[in-house]
Length: 200
Image (tube, rainbow, N blue to C red; front, side):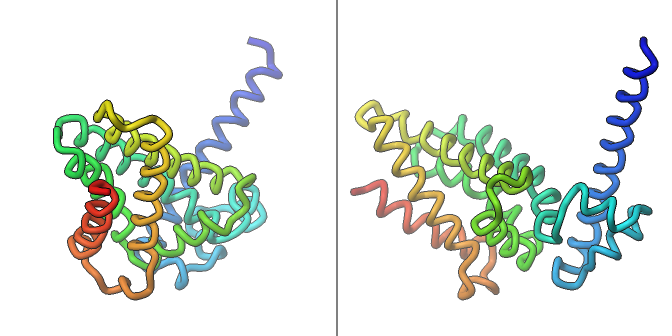
């Protein structure tokens, strides 16, 4: 292998190792203290890198949170999608997709609410924001696929209803009035709203 290719390969591996270290440290500190109580300097120090290097991977704490949470949300969505495949009832199948996403969001309530805020108001061109929006799109596709099991539901109607489900879920998780609500309370609220949507 040419020396230039070896150097490029080594550089990429080092970048990935650094990213993995930053992600692990940010995940640990955010989970333990919450995003508001953690500084970028603490993350850089614990990851054993300079703050300048940290900002090459994420420019703000919000982007660091997106970096950490995106993989967790993607895993939650896949668990929900897999569970929904074996549930014949439409409402129950939709809720099977929703449940692990809500559980993921409520693992650390403040982090979950900041994640949603960053996802909505962040720069969609920034890679971590773009990935968060992509996960939201995949969630809507999973819900639409369940709704399309009914041959009378058109593709357009299923896509629109899935966006409404996504909005209901988002508001239930982000609303200030639900800060102290349990996962089951939030899921009950979401289920009641989706029931109205599906019976129209």
